[in-house]
Image (cartoon, rainbow, N blue to C red; front, side, top):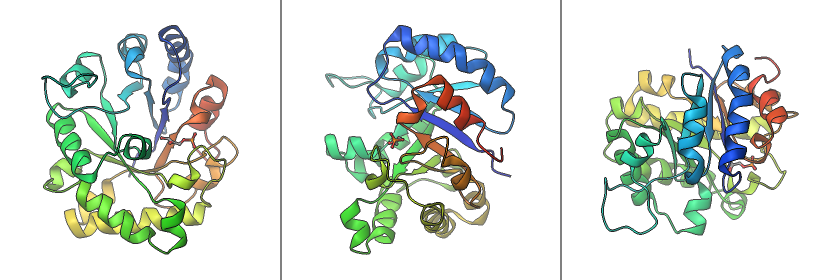
Amino acid sequence: MRKPVIAGNWKMYKTIAEAMDFIEKIVPVAAAARHCEVVVAPPFTALAAAALAAKGSKVAISAQDLYWDKEGAHTGDVSPTMIVDAGCTHAIIGHSERRHDHGETDEQVNRKLKAALAAGLTPIMCVGETLAQRESGGTGQVLKTQFEGGLAGLTPSDFSRIIIAYEPVWAIGTGRTATPEMAAESHHVLRDLARAKFGDKVADGVRILYGGSVKPDNIGGLMAQVGIDGALVGGASLKVDSFTSLINYPGA
Ligand code: 13P
């Protein structure tokens, strides 16, 4: 039985005070929501304060990125050790905005994943195709390349600690969601890739989240699909009311 994960990726939004206020309001909502795990990913500046506000609660705090070295001369980067020190348990890795804004490659995603695992974090690894790739029929190949490149050299036991997020780039922040059927098809492709690489048991256990314009009014249809194990939400995770509705999605 895969426990659903409802995760909010705040991207470059919220001050420390706003983050703490939000977390304090969402703590009782998460406590009452036995059906799912709740994860919130504030910006780096608010991680430690958010983790303090979430301490002892069911709200897990995630970084949005990390660097693979423990420490060193890497101006502007943040290490897995520092992220754990700030109170995080999760780290988003390979988000399409990092891939596009910062040229992040599958090889770098792979290094980040390994470093996150070594630090005891739960990585949330993002994959997904662009509109051009989908329209040219390349979705399956893109997912395969990102999956295999990002997860190269991992053992089944490493993989069992990872959460995957399928985020079609054309659906992110556009209001254009994949239909539940389209999303489910890609989730199926990803689970088959996991099956081939890591075996049935681990593939059946991995949580695959959908991300891309998830809102309170469309999450029910997505979560009703077999193989969609949660959501990674941007815009609709920024307001307490809408994040609360997402946590308590229809059918939960
Ligand atoms: P939106 O929900 O704003 O489309 O963002 C999705 C996303 O990128 C989550 O990581």
